[in-house]
Image (cartoon, rainbow, N blue to C red; front, side, top):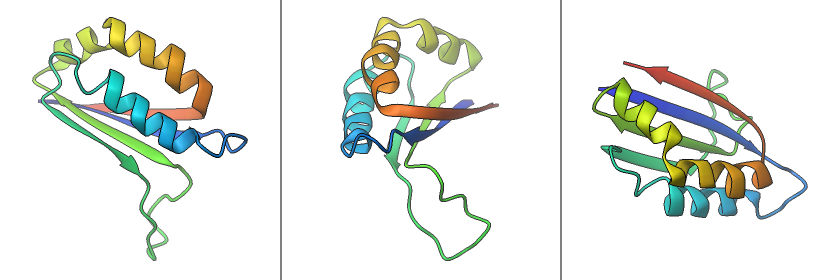
Length: 99
């Protein structure tokens, strides 16, 4: 199993950035072959100080192996998501990949 987690900080100048990012991820990323598990959602506030609450959206994808994730990265739908959705709505992203 290979997990690909992306944490997004949306552009505060665009009040619709979070919703546009969520809709775009669902449209472009969910249908990519090889994605075994797709979960994308808004940050949930917490009373616990150890929980990072500085971001707006997180994406959690699971693949069978690293090759599945490598194929996902160059898939035309992923490239389109980056160009049409990510670049328009985000100011930062941090990615965590692990087996």
